[in-house]
Image (cartoon, rainbow, N blue to C red):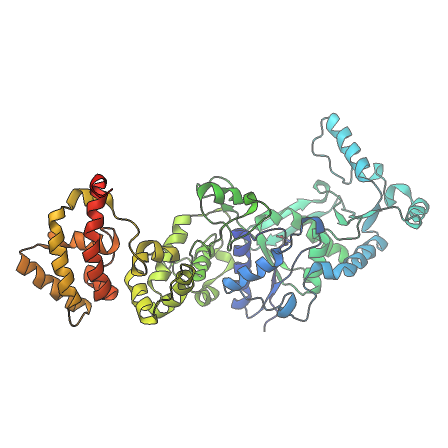
Length: 517
Ligand code: GLU
């Protein structure tokens, strides 16, 4: 293994948004390309926001997509654990206290009420973006303004405190982002971020930096929304004396709504009826429950391929990439700065491509659970042939069922418009005659069926247009579908003969409901 180590660091606060999945994918690709490690770290220090089941959801989503972490919580293991921040609490506290001792951070005793009052006062004076920063810290209640003796007294009294970073206002913070280029901030623009909260838990900033350092992370690849925080992160690396080993940063572009206007949100998914999560999520309310790509009938390989292209492109015309090929082709330099539009039609196109190119036997394996859910346990050969017959037409896995259910159970409805236009009761004897011939037929491969139909039409003086639509309607209820000889051959003599005999009565009934009341 090389020394490249990247991490995916989700907070288990709900379902993992598709943007998070893309972050995981890019980290995975980067790690594998460099022969490095892909670490999963659960950032669960904000206990109020953590949701039971969210961590399990994250693991299940990563595994479904084939993004197996090299290190992580539970059975993933690894030498840099524990991989849940809630299990590393003491280390954060030690690190925060170390900074206080070195004069790089300080105790702040301001109560939430005092902070609110100060913010209110500022607002009244027209300042709506009050910050606890270099211009304010001397007038707040902290170890800098209160002095050593008072601070010692308060600590002895066990007065609640937070620890804040002492941001050096004269300092210039500049770093090279692998995607965005040179980025710089001024110390005087930044607030003195809380590092340790009054409940003893670290904030995201402290825990994230301490862990990235202790876990030997070499590259931080994450969403653009974290770019402003990076200024504080660089200051923290400096304060700890770790600047030499600071990871490289790469901030990924936003994922935009399908319209291209604004950031994709989970509400967009609901509004547009499209998945924006990898898997189904059952929240506390219907409002917080969503279908995922998996339930929508996506092949995980198609989801990976689609997500890879949300922000990255190989610089060539090639669009279909397996995970292994992506590992080869991926590079941070080919990630754009501009937001990437979440084009759901493109996701569907990818899925169609994957379904089309999946061998029939494999497809049959993917379809079996779906059919089992509907109460069918078809023979393997039958299912494989069925898969082959529909794979050029299906976009989502569920399309196999909606388009071809009649291969497993009786026709549920007939295309009435087509019937009204074409069906006449005096066509019934023709279908009955054909039913008899089919029931008695010998060899029954598609070519044989083709020959039987040909022969029948010749003898009866029929053209395909005078027979095929009725065959289709009788067998499947619709005028669409796979090739007729293939369809008839697979359904088998018995089912075909029965449907040809029984369907006409139904057609007549549908067209003349009164006569058949
Ligand atoms: N816990 C943060 C998140 O939920 C991690 C951000 C980062 O990668 O630094 O996205």
